[in-house]
Amino acid sequence: MGSSSFHSKELRRALSEQALLIRAFSMEDHSSLQASASVTLLEGNVITIVLTNQGYRSDQSKEGPFETIEELLQCVSPLYARKRRSTLLDALERLSSQQSPHEKDTTGGGLS
Image (tube, rainbow, N blue to C red; front, top):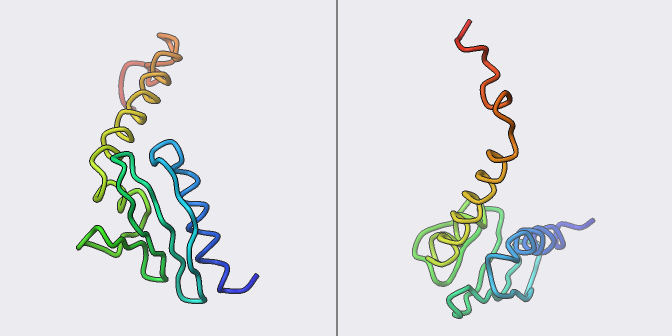
């Protein structure tokens, strides 16, 4: 696989993992040095995200580059940040409620 496809595939993968927390995305240009995508945020505005060897950047953020797509999206989209936090808390609650009482304390009552 050539280096020109790495950035494109990685950006597509990262955005696909965020599918429930963004409205839509479409891949745009890519080269051996970067790839870009047009992303529609939950708020409805469209931004361009660029992935380079240095990380993720957006035309909507003065900060960056960001190490992860999640960091960038939390910076540019308050609704993304809120929904992601809510999703994580819901998942933790489900995990907690699935444990039986004896599984919740497996330490035997104290530290050794």
